[in-house]
Image 1 (tube, rainbow, N blue to C red):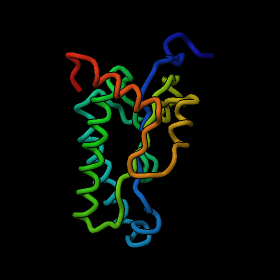
Image 2 (cartoon, rainbow, N blue to C red; image 1 turned 45 degrees about the vertical axis):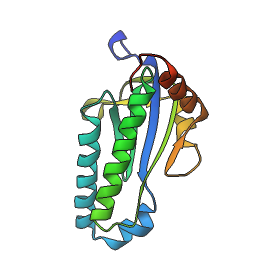
Image 3 (cartoon, rainbow, N blue to C red; image 1 turned 135 degrees about the vertical axis):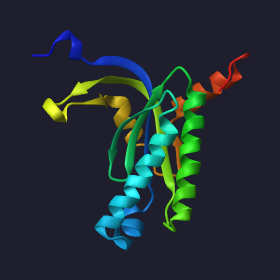
Length: 163
């Protein structure tokens, strides 16, 4: 039975998926398993170094994909962080001669957040329609939902508001 301490929390978040274009075809097939492990370890470290100093949160890594969230209160800051992540990752990919680019899809909406799982597998996660809507955005290197674009535009138009 769930206790009050581990019930989900509803909050509005910016949900972002980041993954490497053609990962299987262009990267996995060209590396040994050990080299792939080392490549992904370096990539994960890069993502962590960009996200850790911000108010963003890495929810999980899934192979070459990363699920991230940011507070909905500052879309400009979230988008700046995602741009920095894309630029840093694209530079890393070019330096490693990987024929790939980081693709980012982002949306804004209400999600349920909290701890799931049991024992050592217990972890923080997010669920909700907005997560699925973010995942189902069209493919591309930089794809923002209409709602997120509107919120970012409204924020940047407010006097005295910084990114």
